[in-house]
Amino acid sequence: CRCTGYRKIIAAVMDASLQGASLDFRLPRSGHAIGSSPVRLDGVPKVTGAEKFGGDSFPADALAVLVVRSPHYHASFAFGDLDGWTKAHPGIAGVFTAADIPGKNCFGAIGPFADQPALAEGFARLRGEAVALVAGEREAILDLDLSDFPVRWSELPHFLQPAEAQAEGAALIHESRPANLLTSGLVERGDPETALAGAAFTVSGAIDTSYVEHAYIEPEAGYAYLDGDTLVVVACTQAPYMDRDETAKVLGLAVDKVRIVPTATGGGFGSKLDVSLQPLIGLVAMKTGRPAALAYTRTESMISTTKRHPAEMRATIGADADGLVTGMIFEGDFNTGAYASWGPTVANRVPVHASGPYATPNYRAEGRAIHTHGPISGAFRGFGVPQATIMQETLYDELAGKLGMDRLDFRLKNCLRNGSETVTGQLLESGVGIAECLESLQPHWVRATADADAFNSASRDRKRGVGIASCWYGCGNTSLPNPSTIRVGIAADGTVILHQGAVDIGQGSNTVIAQICADALGLPLEKFQLKSADTAITPDAGKTSA
Image 1 (cartoon, rainbow, N blue to C red):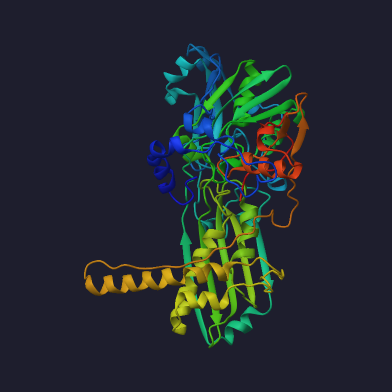
Image 2: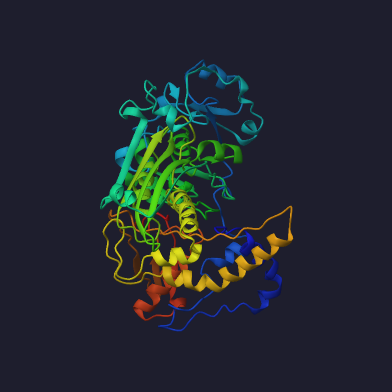
């Protein structure tokens, strides 16, 4: 995983030739799987190159699919003579539009907020939105120039910033959402106004953050085919059961007539939680009776898939003369783009976390997800919490400066501990480790700040800074049910079959769940045969996400 950069990946590659002969492939003995570090059960294919990712195993007879996308942020459109265009281009098997969709042309990560068409109908709400599919033989698609594709565009006014979207008289992107507000979240505790008014020191600030592209190494890719009356989709994903349910809805199929077989996934970071190409290739396979394959280009992936939410944040934090935080008020507008995706989760998670891992007795935080004609914003490593952390930690630095306190000492003074209550009123009885983390940093902090001071004293044209920040994140489902089911069976030869449906995109679930199961049953790991995620044979283990 490149979560902390590519250093570990590069170091591992450089070290492989030196360490290969010394790898210990022995598995731990019975009862000792947990706590050991066996070679990953799915690791060898990854390092030998035998692993199959989304675009590695397209059937030879698969139709290639191209997606016609809107070049405008907001536009109405009408198709011309699609049949004539198809006949004029040898090797093209068909063109498919929203009119060909047999089910409900609407999907979304969160059911009550689902609002995105698989193919736009009549007008596009964002640049890059899919409006039609062209399917054909691979050679024909490779040579195809879509510049003569029969679609007429009429560009419409658009807005890209939340302030524009909420201005008086702004057109609604979705008629059912007044003021282009998707949803909002609020957490309130105590009396923050009174606390701030009586604080010995206060700091206020406003920070804007920008879009961030996931930029996973592997763009979206996969293929679909019919197996009798069942549609099979083989593609990279973080959420196979969500893909199954949404694809079935769009294509008018029963959920047990859609099978999602995840390939290895070359990075996701949240964006592959959303449906992307699954209903598109499924539609082509259903309409033509042939396998259909699609791999997004890098440009296509960047223009059409979700991003980290841009945020416009404002906050005030106060402390008493002893350096204890007394109150905080936070407001954040999050640009959720044209469709909902995971915007509701961001709007609700941010207020829960905006205090950071610090005791804040008086608190109010509100997060708003606002529609614009910009790229769709969705899940990205923390659902908005990193943005709020930038705001809170920046003000903590300023508040420590006003108090004349060391920045690390200020955080230690205010961090949550066993017995603390969070801003939501949750009593943390045990396991609170932020103080221990900060204390372990102290010698490094002292050394780094001293080194920076010495460097800055000697350098005129360059200066060195040292920063410290903390972030916290609840890994549950924001108080909603979050079940995960694993199934174990025994084959005739005594082999234990582990049906493990959590998509392993680097976090190690294939190996870790096998370790847990081995110790629970008192069996050695070599007794287990792993069956990875496949909605036809593995139970729903939930989505792979933060």
